[in-house]
Length: 373
Image (cartoon, rainbow, N blue to C red; front, side, top):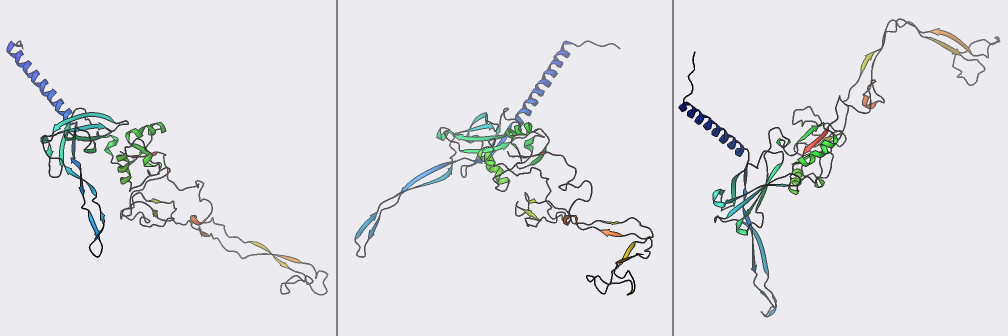
C-alpha cells in the first residue's frame, strides 16, 4: 500500500482546523473561568434623608384672654431612608475576601441603568463577574457606593459565599464536626472560621467581624458563648421517634435543660444508667447436713432465762455446770439457690472487673469544632 503525500491545500486545511480547535479550546477555558467568578448581589440602594421643620410658637393666655407667656418655635429634625433616583449615576461595587486581614479583590464601576434597579423601592440585582472572584473557603463582602455623593459613603453591604466543592465553607454556619488534628492545627483553623467548641465568648473571637459575630449568635439561639462540648457526646434530636424518653422532660436532674424551646436542639442532659437487675443460680451443694451445738445452762446461773433448758438433778455433782450437746440438721436433699441483685444504681461497687467511674462505649477523643463564618 502506498501513501500519497499531503498537498499544499491539505496542509492549509489542516492548519485551519488546528487553529479553529485551538481558538475553541481557549474560548471554552475563558468562559469557564468567567462563570466560576460570579457573585449574584441583591439588595437595596437607599440614602438617608434628613429634614428640619419649625413648629409654630404657642401663646399661653389667662381666663381673660390675656397673653401671659409664649412657647417659642422649635426646630424638629426627622431622618428617613429613600431609594436613589435612576439618573444615570455610576454605582461602584467593591468586592473583598474575608481573610484576616480582609483582602480587596476588585472594584467594578457601572451605570445604574445597566443593571436591574427599581427606583420605587431601591431594589437591585446584579451579577458581579471577574476572574479574581474565585471559589474560596472564605466569604466575600460586597459594598456599594454611588457617584451622587462622590462615592463618599457605603450605601449597601452584604456577605456572600462561593465555596469550592468539598471545602469547609460548604457547611452552614453553626455546623459541628469532629477534628482529629493536633492542637496547633486546630488553633490555626480559626482564621478560616472554625473554632473549638470550648464555651468562649463569641465577642472575643477576633477572626470574626462584628456582623459575623451577630450572625453566629443568632444561629445559636442568641447565645453569647460558643457551645462547650469538651468531654461530651452528641445525640440526634428524637423528634417524636420515641428513643429518647426524656426528650421533653425538663427536670434538671433527670431530663433535658436549655436549648430551643420548640425543638430541644442544643439542650443538655446529665449522665444516667438505665434501671436493671441481675439474676443467677448458685452452684449445686449436693445432699448435705449442717452441724450445730445445743447449749444447756446450769441451775445456779441466775442470769439465764429460767425457761431455758437445764440438765442434771438435785443430787448430781454437775448441777451447776453449763453443758453442750452436738446435733445436726435434717438432710435437705440436692438443691441450689437463686438470687437477684438490686439496681446497680442503688448499690455500691461495680458488677465486673471493668467497672470504673463512668458509663461509656469504646471511644476516641476528638476536637469538636464549629463553623463560625
